[in-house]
Image 1 (cartoon, helix red, strand yellow):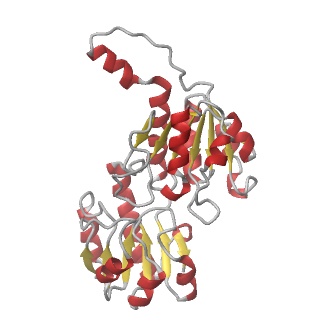
Image 2 (image 1 turned 180 degrees about the horizontal axis):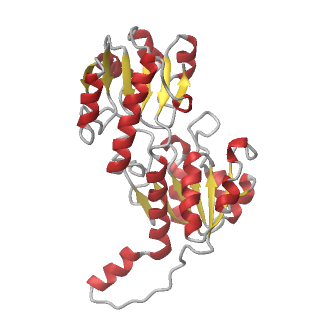
Image 3 (image 1 turned 90 degrees about the vertical axis):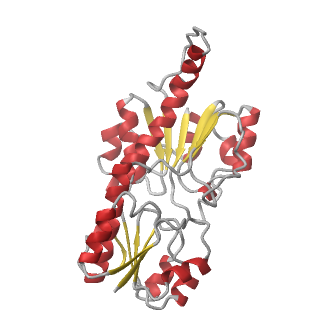
Length: 324
């Protein structure tokens, strides 16, 4: 069988994974350095996949037109946890098996969010800048302890963020579509997290972190109305997907002072060098790197490869299986 890898940063950190796939008897076409992204067109994906049987992808889309053109494609392994880059409904109706690499990126994303929080809580960068100018300026910083962190979307990512924030003695509140789901048993109490309706969470949070999946319901969830309900002078993080946040609304809130800061790691079309948030005050922009650690990528690459082989052989852990 032939396998195409379009997920970026695959063979670089993990050449041994390519070798392992080949040892499983697979013909591997490694396109992980070809620049595929969420901006990649259906036509480019069709050309890349061709007559391959399997695909390891990231944000580049495996859409209905791609499946219709690439008739041999029956196995898709997501190097990631979001499912917005695969047409799941089409796969369900056409016998295409899909898996995702759950449990690999969550810890590094949690680290990234804590980096954002500590940036705004302590501003070590600003203090260092003054010192390098020869200025001895001691400033009282808000700190993280006792501040309220609101997590919108309390799934696996939210759990990892809460785990780290609890160590800093932050107050943690969360909102999710199903607040009493059985999978949450013990998790909220373990980290001291308390469920709040969304309006209450926005009004109480010093930091609001949005980590929901991209769906019709969450598209432009972060809009003027959402921001208007946020606590004055609070700080917003979008680590979900670019289309979850309205960049114009975020910029307006930063310029007016409604928001004291924002950090955005995701953009509608990536790579992105023309975000409407470029130059906005008190705004951190990162190039979708909250999950971007060497350890995480190696783990994600291995799991995506093993999941693909598992789909093909019918031996795969159910927790990774999306359609099978």
